[in-house]
Amino acid sequence: MKIFGLFCTLFFVSGCAMGAGSNEKYEIVYSIDSMNDEEVGLNRNQEMTIAVVPKLINIAYFNAVEEGAIEAGKDLGVEVIYTGPTLADADQQINIIKELIEEQVDVIAVSANDPEKLAPTLLEAKQRGITVITWDADTLPDARDFYINMVDPETLGRHLMDMLAWNTNEEGEFAVLTGSLAAANLNEWLKWIKVHQEEYYPEMKLVDVVASDDDSHLAYILAKKLLADYPNLSGIIGNSSVGPPAAAQAVKELGKVGEVAVVGVSTPNPMNEYLKDGSSQIVTLWSPKKLGYLTVALAKNARKEIEPYDRQEIPKVGIIRMVGDTVIMGEPIDFTKENVDQYDF
Image 1: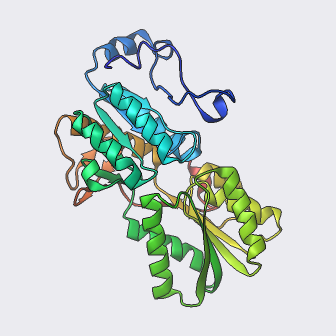
Image 2: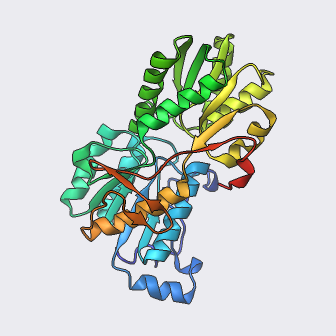
Image 3: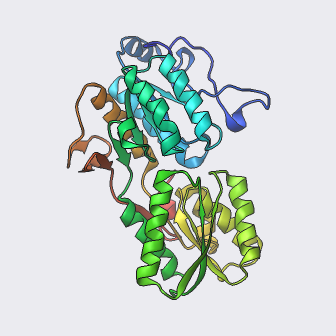
């Protein structure tokens, strides 16, 4: 398996890059055709293969994670396989992980679509001698060594509620457009959104939570339905990266700019025009590229039995924090019309 990604001359891709009838799932980071002679020589001598499995591929957020993972693989001299399902679907993830187990990769680092469904397969990987960690979205603690979280979930959830309240005069009805209802990270943020609203914004009312399964088109359809079903809606929180651009597009098309605030978690590039034209007021995120880099860096260390520790400095990432068995990468970044052009991801 140590040369799996080197002597495969095909890239297996998915989503919009695949033919309609294709069943292939893998996207291999390294191939002979994409590497120069020096890189080929380096990677032939590699002794570690790290598989990074996102919730799904071919959306801006996870594309940026992939960039960071690829960069870390080259910097740190490890082979990286970046592969994920075409939908945010736990069963697809399980099938991919089972294939990686058979390929005998050294590390599986996964952003779990469903913490409970994935746990038995991840436990099987551990029993087969594979190091297992999670990032972005966790599984059950027994099924992995540690979890890499982007930000403190309470801090993020409360901040998302604050962002909406600041843009709605702290009153009115609002809805949450989330990703998967089974995703542990999204549910944790949602919990703190609700807690913060009840504690600090009694004049606001959460009227609905709808799930897009991280599908951009479905998110757009659901946003339009929310605006139709709740004519007095004051705002929408997009709880996953596809939510804010979908909600902003719906607000713009239905002529509700200035009436319905759109905030949430998203990358700056898809939100650029919406922030500038007022369809959205503010979104927040961390650097997904740094998250990909950090995941590979800590995965390599974990395979060498080097555990992360509090205030550890990771090159190209920064100083991380440890809370129990969870790594906290850093603080979120807010994007507005004033600063959005400063970022490119």
